Image 1 (cartoon, rainbow, N blue to C red):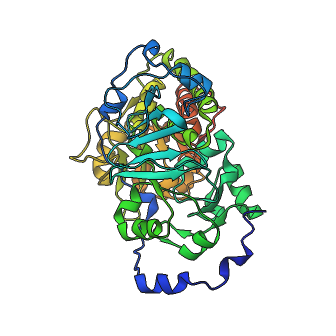
Image 2: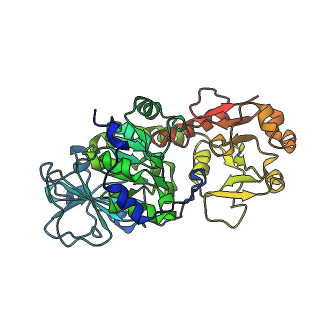
Image 3: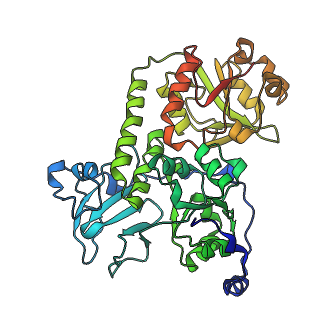
Length: 421
């Protein structure tokens, strides 16, 4: 099998090259990823009627369903020797746009990152491309999945077999197919995102590295990967404010594998789930979503965060109407006393175990701080914990909305939440 990498530990000329580079990667905590607030790309907003997108299935990289829904974007980049045919219609995502050109070429334009020209197999990239354009040559195999959020989207597309390497080990994964692939050796741990095994990636025929915003803190790693001839695609889904915007990134990855129709169908199912949520009655129940750091401080969500939006969509009311501190990120650190002043009277507490550590019972929760015994939700028995799948299940965030609604209405059939006692 292509991913049985027995040869990976053999010496090669690359060793000398790596030694000369003298790379010195620093250790960062990937659990504390920061999200940048990014404005919507103009290229994803200028649209006209479908009738203005005159394309054919033979000349466009888009699938049949996507080709029917192409829109014309006057801001789509011009590419020498290629004819612009239309752009992908997006409903929630604001951090990328996809433009289609004659001959099966597609340009994925990621906000505040780069433009990625997806080139058909056996075709060549046109001349005259800008320095900010990265060439992604089909087909893609032995991809280095250096971030976790796209894994579920690859799974939903049925393209897990294109992933050969990961920056997280087997016990990290709560996506069944990912954990199984690593157990079987189909996906191999290739080092942390900030200290990958370069020789393993090159010897293993890695054709693409999928990173997230954390790679920008170690630019020397990105540069080294690119010097080895491996293009780097930076996923900006964490900057999406709407939860479905994150899931809609499945359409960006679908372009790599000509699976736009599958992505459209899958995303339509997620939209239907959210439409159900639109019928949820608003309640007066207040909800706190948080975790406790090792120093005893509390970390809450900014009011603009996608988690807060999902709580609102589920019919709940987040404990803060405005950010509790002057901060632009998704996570805001406050003292426990400040947290107590607002959250002690919350109707429901949701403790984020993905970032706050293991909490399996009420005793575990109360051990975090004795003040919690005075909280209304604790006395009422309304304390819930998230499971570890939540931050990896980018493909099914709509289910979290359903979970929160179940919590507020006395339901028990939940995917991401568990009540503790």
